[in-house]
Image 1 (cartoon, rainbow, N blue to C red):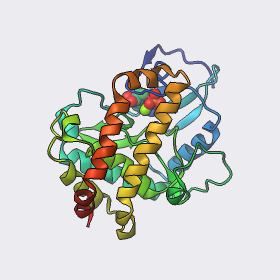
Image 2: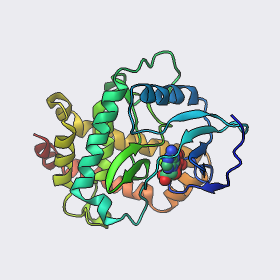
Image 3: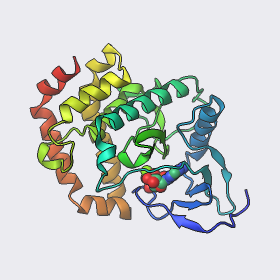
Image 4: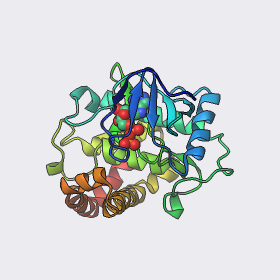
Amino acid sequence: MPETTEPEVLLTGGTANRGQVTRAGDTVRRPQHPTSPATHALLRHLADVGFAGAPRFLGVDERGREVLSYVPGTAITPPYPEWALTDDALVSVADLLRAYHGAVSTFEASPYTWPASPPAPFAGELISHNDINLDNVVFREERAVALIDFDLASPGCRVWDVACAARLWAPLRPEADIDDTRRGRAIARLRLFVDSYGLARTDRERLLAAVRENHEWCYDIVGTAAANGHAGFSDYCASGALERATRTREWYLRNGDVLRSALL
Ligand SMILES: Nc1ncnc2c1ncn2[C@@H]1O[C@H](COP(=O)(O)OP(=O)(O)O)[C@@H](O)[C@H]1O
Ligand SMILES: [Mg+2]
């Protein structure tokens, strides 16, 4: 694919590829990784089944970067706008995630080499996104319309993505670590997310375990990257992320009953 003649604008908000994601016209340029062929096959499948909630894979440019379609809209970053933290916005994220899981459920993933899967009880059902962070969801008119950043997608399962999203969007952490309009509403938002998604009974029963394992899995990725000198994740750790993670871990232990009863 020819090098773009459009001026490139840096897209900020992410951490893993910080400083390396650009927009050129209606395309996005991102670094490739060893597992990119798998991710590209996934994006091609989503396009083939008519799923509109993901970027299109357009090719590789002369600098070896992946070229994706730019999804018009807003991916939110701190300080988060209030419209993105409403219950309606949350329901739209649950709707989008369910639609993604429906679209991906017919994808044949076995020919490809994927990034690491979630732990065994949560691996192998379908290709989960695995990183439903606030800055990986594009909104238009205050509704979630697309998931972006499929770099961590791998053979996982539905409840793993629901756990990740609920953890970050409810969010599930001590009140003192919530400094926006979601404070005091986390448990109600957990329930709303799970109900809106329509999580199956058997998955509800293992959601809390998934939340706790997902928390550890994500902070393993952060800690390992920081230990390897990754600048973005090192800065994230320097901002107190690991201390917040410890407080959250303890909060899960103290609030198991509250969380479980919110799900039944
Ligand atoms: N295809 C896309 N369409 C629209 N915006 C995008 C797209 N890809 C990335 N962005 C924007 O760039 C930011 C960083 O990109 P992302 O691929 O998520 O980087 P990272 O891998 O570092 O998290 C996103 O949070 C979003 O604002
Ligand atoms: Mg991202």
